[in-house]
Length: 319
Image 1 (cartoon, one colour):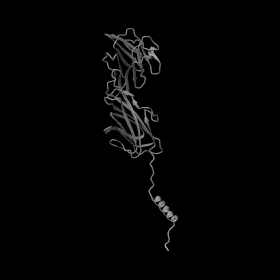
Image 2 (cartoon, rainbow, N blue to C red):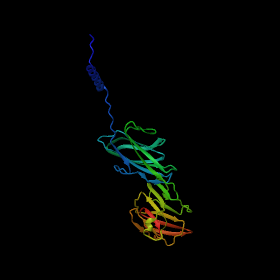
Image 3 (tube, helix red, strand yellow):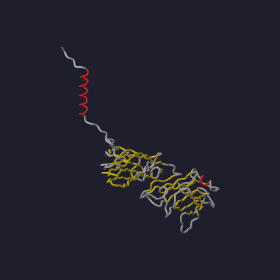
Image 4 (cartoon, rainbow, N blue to C red):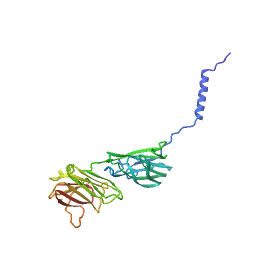
């Protein structure tokens, strides 16, 4: 008689064999990402909407970006890398390390314009990078893709075999030279920022800022909106000359602004609207020793030349 194994016995043997194979197979475990907090802006732990200084620049001018990272885990991050991928050109980088050793250099080519490395980033340690790029000569904006990694970088971008943390930032490029000029001024730059001084049809006004310092963002602009003046004074004219010297910082020693109108304005007054919402009517300067805030007005030919000595940012409108 031929004996047949029962179906139940066959299933039991198969299941036992499968369990044995499963237990003997290597265990696959997904690696946990590095405990890294990161963001943009000048302060570690505060993630701003942008780290660009200033947020708009003239095409071909420089812009700075502030980025940071911090080890939030309970042990060292053995290695940390950062790249910046952008169509701009690397100018320089400044690094502030806390419980870390590392630095930044120009990228090795292509769109990789920044490469940084640290070894290690200790528990609770942080790194801050201010990188300056020269923007393209044309276009509406320049984007920078910042990539943090604990696994190194390769030419063309970070190695994504493991931890890869990305954050994009950008700066607007304002090519309207008649109404805008500026960028991040660095050592060796001319400290004068000026909208198009060739006045005429379509360009009735120019604004020039003599910066009180370098390695800061400075922009000058003209805005057709003079509602602030019209709500308070009669006969407001021209455009608002908008001043940005180091993102609203005050300068007790003062800085100089020159506004030129392609028209004559006899007996005009000039109002300085401050960033905090207050305003001041600028008094006439002492010719020998101008003390800010004050203003000197001259009419030469068919133009009005206004030189303002200020300690704070804001905008100037005539009436």
